[in-house]
Length: 446
Image (tube, rainbow, N blue to C red; front, side):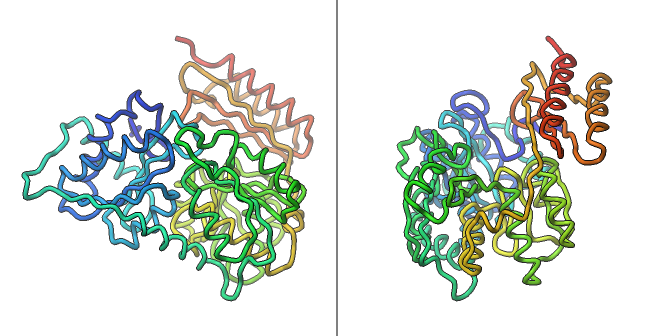
């Protein structure tokens, strides 16, 4: 059953257009309260730094209080911080107002359950079934209350620092940290400084409109210039809500999520603490898979989206997974993707080994990869078209088992994503172009 509002990571869209309106947020809060806290309890609401966050925070607060749920408002805090504090504060569920890596004119609403995990499809469908109903308002004696708990962010900062091995700090490391002018702009620099690092902060001056604007994990160019420019040992960039991270080595080169996953997995494997398989996605670089398998580490692929990586980890008993984008799951440390915690794990390995980031990432070769986004009038399944399927088969035959093709419809935009990777960069580029042209021909027209 297709969900109408919930996508791969909550509800998201352009502010002021359905579903991201005040009226919808009010009804969504009412529906969520009836499903997740039918007998009352507490909900924690956090947000990133978008200007529209104030508006949606007020609408959600009203909907929850009217439905008899007590509201705790924590203000700007990374998405994983909300997951952690939802557990710590004994809330029935948590809510994050954020559109992650999108520009400020978008926003979104996503939920965590009492255990700090994202909701499953079945629970989201139950909430959607109630959204069209009028918002519930209980009698006065049954209404909830609202309080602010801004000082609770210190608990999250302490938790992040505690994920480093005993006796390890970051003294002696000069680190450039880019917080995307987003939710991590306070906590990330403070955690690094408390651990003894010398820090150079950028992207830490939010104004409500500059989140992810030429900064953060999706635009790391400034960070790439800054790290060698100030002679830092390393840099890392979060996205707007702090659940993703990319890192930059001392020469200004990007180390992406696949490479970070390789570093974390091989270190845990060597230490005997890696449980179960490592889980990537269908988009994870083939170099990651082959490098892990060569070292005796099982690797599995899930659908794109951290929720699917999490589901595979839970089913297989694994503790480590992630996406190329830098959404890393360290389930031996936390319950959801956490950019700051993931960065701290890598920084601690650098410190323990007295090694640079480039040295740690070097053993994993990256296969050439090309991603083409084909814009269509409406999404469709390209694998059902004979011309597209024929083009895909021709390209795969050329790689002779040393490459692969991934075709999928975007879960958030009217795009068909064509990903081709293999041992030969020229074949990869040519193959991606050939398949993309076949998709364009096959795309349905109104």
